Image (cartoon, rainbow, N blue to C red):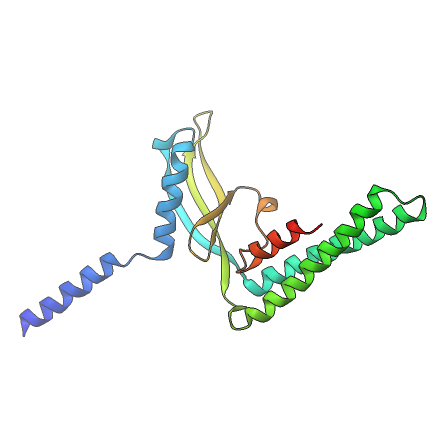
Length: 185
């Protein structure tokens, strides 16, 4: 009986050791890629890596639709302005922009319908990575960076500036939609 209990305990310990969390895997990826770029890589001390935000496909689609609606309104305004005087190449360009922006809005609405049961899937997660390291002056400082990963846990963005964070994620089918838009005349 003791051997069975001992065997079960050993299996549990080995299983726990082999099962790394997403945060630990991400930590290793971030450290492998960025520690060597620091002023003094040997002074690096890990403090924390915490998930602070996530973006679903639905949130990303809505953000993109809002962007293209804003671009559409701008193109319409510019088109009206450019055609009040003598029509020029600008009016043709703005007319094309109107068509392309409307195409993207309609395409994103179609993607929303196609992704119906996956709309609430998380497409991107944002983590705060905190560490200590020596700066260029040799002083030990506390650094905070934002690390964004896609749904495949690949790093897509690392920044210390919140204004440079991606507000959208990779939406399935979006790249094809962009290619179609770029091929339009």
